[in-house]
Image (tube, rainbow, N blue to C red; front, side, top):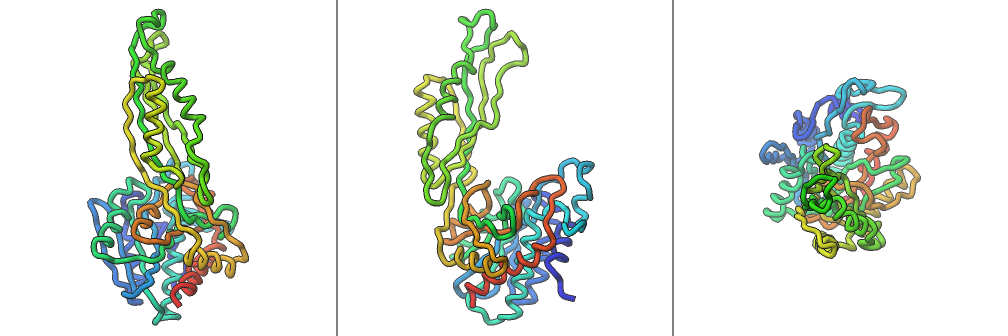
Length: 376
């Protein structure tokens, strides 16, 4: 009996592959594709399992990329069904990873099987890059595989990342890029003292208030055709000893930039330092760049995907760069055209994560149609 997308999705969901565990999901994927001529290469870096599958040696190379790891379940008692027991109810499949992103993996595995069976002599190559380190630190996963591929001059042409991009209905949104993410850990230095003797202390909260106001009001850029303007948000602010009569000695602030390609990490760092210095603050600032922005302008891949979506669903898709980061940021360094497309994202990372079963076959068909547009 042929394995359906639903069958494979349920099997993958049943494996509790919380980052960085894979729980043999990658072996299962390989077992479906190796008999069809895919070469399977395991790439383990530190504690992370990765899988590189490829059929063919010629160009163009179309890669499907995804992750078998999932986020933790959260409180089990809050789930209506056991998170790693895939459950069908009223036309909906429930389970951790149902939307992010084991259904996508199942869909592009079955799509590749159907395509190769129907077109064994297709042009170019089909590949899959699967990691178990997307939801975690993202240090020993896709980025390491991309480094290995680059080192041996294994060139890629097109990549489809199976992230859940759809908003209201399957196919309405395709991501053709993502904003960069830059984190700052700011320490404002003051002098501890008694609140009754403020002249003997320096309150770091008071000292930084005007600077925070300026940072919050600053227009960092205006975005561009593909990206909304860069945003600045404070995520944590901590100061004080817990006592009501003590001026704190320091204030700790965590903030984040989600930035467009109209700015760079360095330009944002320089502007923040200029603002802080202008307010004569004594401070230290540590930066962490989680990801640079990437962008795929309208070209062969996005056009092929848009046509596949239109033919399968009748929807004219929208290209978007909103949302969080993804492994597309690593793949874009070695692949000129990277897009993300997958199911509706309303329940991802939530209790009772789910996907409508009726969308699984169309999702698979969209992936298969995109293969047909590019490799026939």
